[in-house]
Image (cartoon, rainbow, N blue to C red):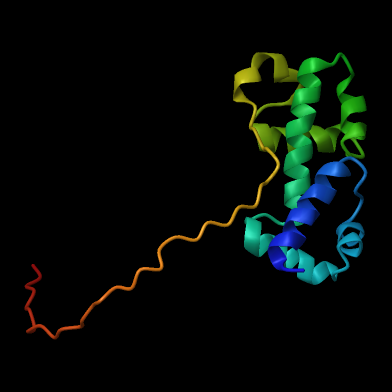
Length: 143
């Protein structure tokens, strides 16, 4: 299996189990790869660490949940994997720029974080005929 397939399967696994993933070893064992190499490959190909990706997805989905439901913030915090409402509020504020209690006033300011899609585009392949030429020295006067 190549890295593109591994990352695609990892993203699918994360999306399917977003609220139940407790650690990265769980994801790596399902991909039949060491946690170290999966994290390195994921970061290299996506620009996000696995934990950062999971956290960003949960925070985006928690904002959607806060907008549409009448649930208490504490219930949503527990649902999205936070141990305390304070830690949820802190993470939410850093990600979105406002507290969960201010969601109704900031609906337009929600930071969107959609699932990643891996696409590879290869362009070019044209040979370039180029030459390297020596030019005479130029003198630059500094003031």
